[in-house]
Length: 139
Image (tube, rainbow, N blue to C red; front, side, top):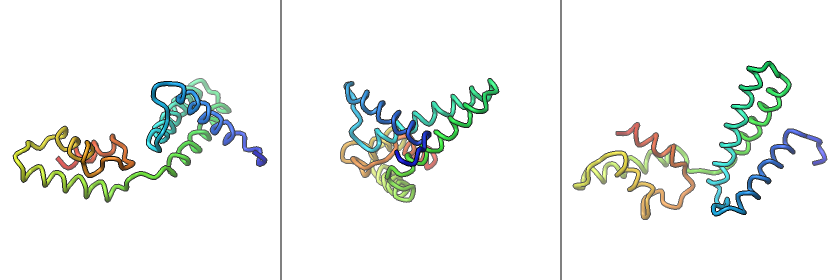
């Protein structure tokens, strides 16, 4: 990189290394959601490392990790997922459909109906944890 941005270069090298390592396993990264999961995992690890460095009074390393967290969150924000409005609408519609049918309405049945095969969000880029949180809020 001509800009000599070492933090960005280190983050990109780390992401490429993890992607390459994942490609050699039984679960390679093939979708945007898998990449988003990788970015969030790395950001969480960097946050934990920054806390450890802060506790050890290593401010130089803490700043480096915090800069990496900022870059990872920047990259993660660029991954397109289903928006909260569309999620709320899909979940509300599914809950109404389940209430009119004879199926008991609980978190498991709603999640299965929303994101399972043939569901409203089947095949769409959506985080399962976000869907689960919204379903809990609606029930």
